[in-house]
Image (cartoon, rainbow over all chains, first blue to last red; front, side, top):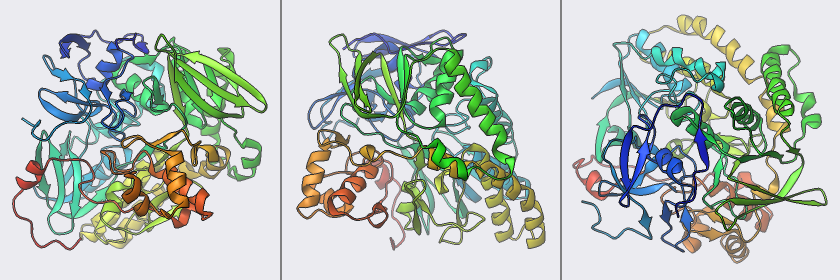
Length: 105
Length: 459
């Protein structure tokens, strides 16, 4: 799942100074970027498996339209990773299949 | 949190309108989903220095962002609007809590989304819209690595040129059939569009100079993941088959209005045949079928950033007049230069719409294509259902759940309509727009309950 990122850094890009945790693995993020961007910089693989067939998906539209970037952030399920800025210490989980009722803290 | 005017969306239209309205004496609440004002076109423009490779047009958005620095404007970032209620006002969510902003006037400036480009494999990790890659360039300093750009439209050339300037040129440009020659008669007679045309030709020259392989007239798109996680992209040009491998496959076929909010309010909409999309029915000021609700920018019909800026300012003048802050003569005097700017900005649009039309294979894709990404419904099952009685969006929804996932049809509606149109031999214009219900973005029941009792609902 941890395929190489499909992106590289642009000239003069700021250092990735924030540290998030994705399923127990550290992921670095740039201040001001979305969680989805940090996940795409970390890996080219899937960030969730769909509730219907279990197919792997990754962030797609990056503007809050497609909902393919849903992850659990700090215990909150079904958060659009493209709409949330990365912050130091965030704990992110990939969503495998559907959430259950009562997952909301 | 009451304001004279609530504006939804801080892109060029919303920002221009906020400034004009505030200077005219209205209190303005500007709600936007992003952390920073700018919209998609000027995403992050206020926060980044030294990204010259994104070009001068992008930097121009900075002045609009600075214009929000006015005591009459309250900018609410990270605010997701999920309902506009005729009695209560605009209802929006942030950090799991909902708020109500009552307003005498509402301006919806929610902009565009990319037109979905469905084909077999478009749901795989490693495929994205070209606009998504541009957002990553603007906001995260990330450039696509070994990417292929595919589809059609001016944005493809811009993204290609930006990638070349950033030192990560695309592996190839795979263009679907264009109709440039056929569209030439639609070029404006006056040379208003000339600077834009020259810019476009400059982009094309840069792509040529960089030696990027350029395939034209491409069709039969198909993507698969290779064993090492890369993307194999198969397509044809005429009778020739091609197979390329890349790290990221970027697609683009233009943009369509984001109309979930305007549709959820039950406003009148109309089908724009040239752009192949529905848009709210508006008067020349952007006034909708509800007198106190205005729409400006690409959400009211695709025109681009410069047109959006002019439309935002025009709507603000009309709202100032409606609020009794500006007489009709003053409104019309100030509108005249804006209308000229708008007509200049729109002069190339008929040419672009005709030159870069959407190939029918993306409106009614092959059977194995997953059309509804949320509920994973294939084109084949939609065709079958359409032939056995599901002859409209609502019937399709109840039989196959298309459009019932979290995206609420944003990614599948164009193709579901295209497939029903094909199966039933009816024009797309008679099959939509789909009815949208609130909440237009998912919120929890707990969050809705916490708002407390609602006055009698009529919608």
